[in-house]
Amino acid sequence: MPDIIISEFMQPSAVDELRRDFDVHYDETLYKRLDELYAMGSTARAICIRNETEIRGAFFGAFPNLKAVGRLGVGLDNIDVPACQQRGIAVLPATGANEVSVAELAIAGLMMLVRGTTYFATPDVAAGKWPRGRLIGREVSGKTLGIVGFGRIGRHVARRAQGLDMTVIAADPHVPADDPVWARMGVEKVSFDRIWDSADALSLHLPYTPDTHNLVSAEVIARLKPGTILVNVARGGIVDEAALAEALKGGHLGGALLDVYATEPLPADNPFQGVPNLILTPHIGATTDEARIRTGHMIADNVRAVLTGTIPDTAIV
Image (cartoon, rainbow, N blue to C red):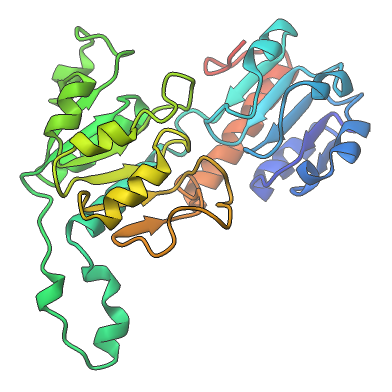
């Protein structure tokens, strides 16, 4: 029976690293077979997961010796963190490993949408058409980007936006006004009201909680400036998806990029069919070759540390 179970994809070189010291069972589809997963949990001292394996409820009864949950990402929606803390189980998110990947997707989507449909013209141009008139877009230079959630990823986005000569403002009630990060990065801390009213583009970088559920509501979307671009590479459930679809169809918003959704994969009756100026990606913000390598080896190192008696600084205990 294994010391470590890996129930979702992990970088093979990181799996091999763990196998040098531990008995490891690796099956990236195991999360789909809970009976099988739970049956081998009695000896496991660690489990490595992505966002499909649920660490809650009956899971804990099946894993009585668990010491660590290695999260191959940073979102903790699928982990009952308080229950882990009560049981002395260290939760190990891959803090910092995928920030660049997520930030780059946000900026790429922002630039594509501000420029309009330019990047979607390939079939027409290849067919000999020349639709220049309908492809006139805008520049990001000189625009105001509002970042909602000024944590590590939000700060990566801010730095890249400033490199594009954008003005950056940010709203985050958890970062105090006297935190030196504001002056160091040249970003103005503003209220949610101010950011909704002032931004030419919004990029969301905050967790999904009861307080952030549909934070970007129909009422908020209605008050955004005409032509505003919305980017959500954070978590599903933060944006009222039906209201967003209506605002895009009606022309109030200039475009949106969504990488995350309230229900994943999207159900057949989702509101986005035929919606213009919309880029949908399948929760891939953190998934690049480089991020997978960093994430896998970070979690392998941190799991090893916990099982050999050391608690990493980024652990939640």
